[in-house]
Image (cartoon, rainbow, N blue to C red; front, side, top):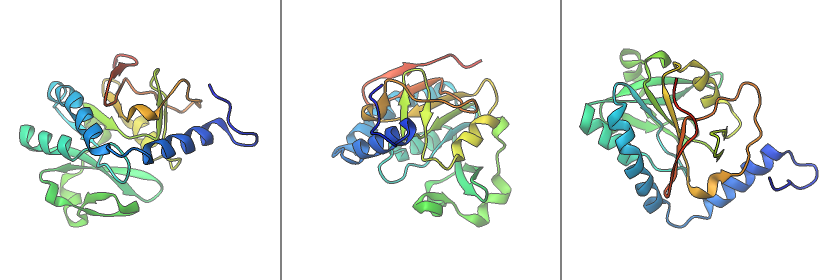
Length: 198
């Protein structure tokens, strides 16, 4: 792994480098479309209760994935922010049910949430965002721990797939004991199988 500058932790350096590289991409829409084409067969195969994050800012865009899943199966689970850096899970039936919420992320309208909550234990496949990944499935997020907490609650047989652009892949991500690796990472050019779901 390339050494970070003196005084900067490896994780902080990787996060900063990955974010800068992702911001510099000028064709994120086309790259996101290529990623979606790789993702859709996985969703069709594990369609019982898929979780798809709602892309924001420079992340891999997921609207086409959400739209496909809604048309194919009638609903899809999306996350939204709760106090304490936790995520709630909501069964989405239409993209029009989303509105801008915390951090500018589109989330389900508050008045709809109570009747369509989903428990983490019900998720069969989860598409997870990240800032950086390595080929063994290790992941760095934004540092708030939202998805780290969710990953710890997902069932053992839930297939966890990280979505990223090639520029977000690193040779080695430093890990801590609580970190949970992805089973698979999908980029615009490759599908990396890190480990099978139990």
